[in-house]
Length: 298
Image (tube, rainbow, N blue to C red):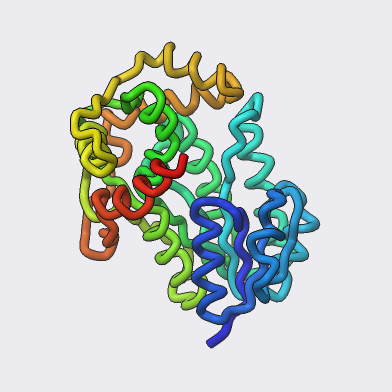
């Protein structure tokens, strides 16, 4: 049955893929993003577009009204001087809109590691938002907790291309679950369309298996014709300085470093892997089909 579904962050890594799936399935889709790409990307579709700021509770309310379900998230803002304050502003606007509109089904993009409220960098704000959403009465909420995104490897294309190395501040040999955002989008789209969850539930999406960053680097190297590609573990101070030099705020850089260095403590390995939370896309497939083409055209 056709549903009316709202997707926030519709030009993002996950939201854009959800939008594509739902439009292909013939649902009535309302898309919101502040990016100018929203109109360019979806102008030839039947989607109803809501360009604007995701902190605008009035605009969010208008989008949520008469909808069957909504995908919400706390999008990145790498220049925010206080990232937790930004996360709270976005999250509170969404909650206010949920209350005003009366929407009953919400899929919230959280993260593996959101069982902890401190010591996990950026993820702590997602944990806080889960708690706030859990206080809503008569609203069914699915908290998607995907593992570390394989897509994050795309951020290192310039480093690999111009310096001939891959790099991370995380422990290089500690395996963690990693997932392609395409797999996360499939799970989210199914929940948004089927409305087959009740109450407040957590849904992990863990990828096909666990990988270390060393293993990922080896897979990348083979795929791009650099089998000897080396992985460098950057000291936290150096990594933070490098991010700040690229325009990332000091507070966000600190949170990113704290998140990556906390991985060795097992924050991403909390959820037991099952057939239900294992998704199909392997790192080899992602790197061959997504990373390598992006690397070659960069």
